[in-house]
Amino acid sequence: MLKYTADHEWLKREGDVVTVGITDHAAETLGDLVFVQLPEVGARFKTGDGAAVVESVKAASDVFAPLEGEIVEVNGAIVDDPGVVNRDPTGEGWFFKLKVADPSAFDALLDEDAYRATLS
Amino acid sequence: MAEALRQTPLHSLHLALGARMGPFAGYDMPIQYPPGVLKEHLHTRAAAGLFDVSHMGQLWLTAKSGSYDDLARALEGLVPIDLLGLAPGRQRYGFFTCENGGVFDDLMISRYGDALLVVCNAARKAEDEALLRAGISEACEIERLDRALIALQGPKAAEVLLELAPDLGDMRFMDARKTAICAAPSYATRSGYTGEDGFEISVPLEKAEEIAKALLAAEGVAPIGLGARDSLRLEAGLCLYGADLDEATTPVEADLSWAIPKARRRGGARAGGFPGEATILDELERGPNRLRVGVRPQGRAPVRAGAAIFVAASDCAPIGRVSSGGFSPSLDAPISIGYLPASLAKPGTQVWLELRGQKAPGEVVALPFVSHHYRRA
Image (cartoon, rainbow over all chains, first blue to last red; front, top):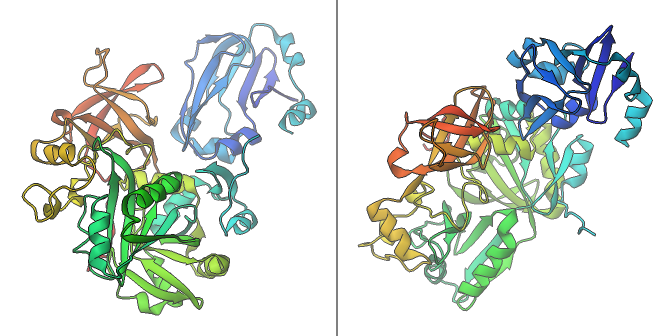
């Protein structure tokens, strides 16, 4: 089951590791991405820290760490071809995997209905 | 409460085509269509792109005396270009100058018979009209034209337009011609803002949608939004007023000296006589202190307008600034336009660019980034 943040990130949890990406809405709003900067494996973030950067044709945007934790894997494929994020933001376009300090914090995030409600 | 955005006559067509709209110069404009900026950009360079630029200003100028020479001389008092020598059916690029030598706005000026049609930037059109009225209304009539403006750009543009207006076939780059398109009186110039061959056509408001639809029905034509319009002109090394040009930038600094002919320079038949002449004529002789250049950041990250430029990675004080920056779909790389001290403005110069608090390496390159394909012969 996916969870969401108000900053348009989605999270998929497997044990204490969450995979993080940006939502369809975010990818659509950003438009064609031309550049992605991912964090280093091993980097630690607090909730809300800027973890990655995306550049669309027009502007740069931050992708935030949705939970406190440590980066255990990043998706190099989207650095080589930022268009993957636009084509498949919730699948192949994932950004990074985070080993979270407090897995129970995942439950407090928005579910799909709550996220959709933020879009209106 | 914010004032409602203005609309061009193609507004409902944009919505029907699925455009994502956004505000620009007080107008609700199509920023992109479903294909997106990258695809729209590449399509224009490969086939033909249709742009709604009806938000731009169109002003029709005539001399009260009816004599073109009187009109030309009056307008030469505001622009440092050769209008007296502009033949009927030709167009020139020019700019209004300020007392300090800066650029007030950049324009396209085309001659039809004894009249001139001035096309100016949407964001400055009210100011441009006021400047003209204050400057030349004693000798000239100034009419604000309420017309649509459509650009068709790309290697297939001519083939498409000639189906509707076969009389335009022998037009060369910067020709201007009155014609009829879908039975509507139209003014067509062979020019544009993309670096590709193409046309800009001024058409009556009530015929704009019909003409746009007729062009879009042709094979190879796609609607293009302002997002791709900006990336196309950036690749072509063309200035955007408000970014690369402003009242604090002289045309010489902006590398637009080519537009100022000998006749208007010191020693010329009609030297000076425009605002800021002392500054501009001095710079033409001595060289400007700074110059507009192209910059290629080394990595893949775009370096945007406002970023500082340094000559050494360890420097704290910037020596220049990026005025426009983005991503080039044709080169699959970031590109920027900026201003550097004239001594450093040579292709090959290594520079450092401010990027998210760090300094990223880059190189000065000659403009344009992508070659122009104008039909000159």
